[in-house]
Image: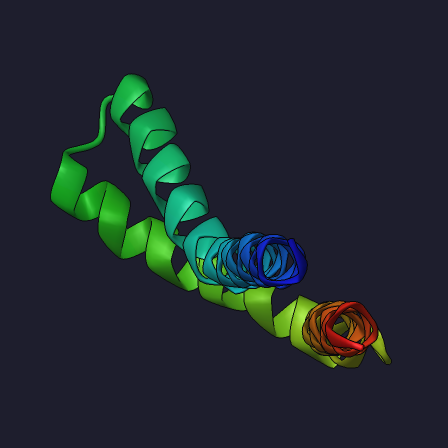
Length: 108
């Protein structure tokens, strides 16, 4: 029965690892995809106005670049976004390490 308990603890540890890995990848992936989505939305908006897609992209890319520059120059905002992702990683590592203590207690 002891081996079953250890196996269950390790299974739950793996599930928590997978969940936190997905959350971190989704968080940083969203940071990359957000400007790209904004470009696509501006291109669609300018296409509705009547501009060609290529011309709309030539206009949308600098607009989004400028908005990203404003976000970058905002004091503390970029660091806060990165710190939030790093805290997600640290929290996941802490929770996964907690399972090691539980597994050691179950083995005894």
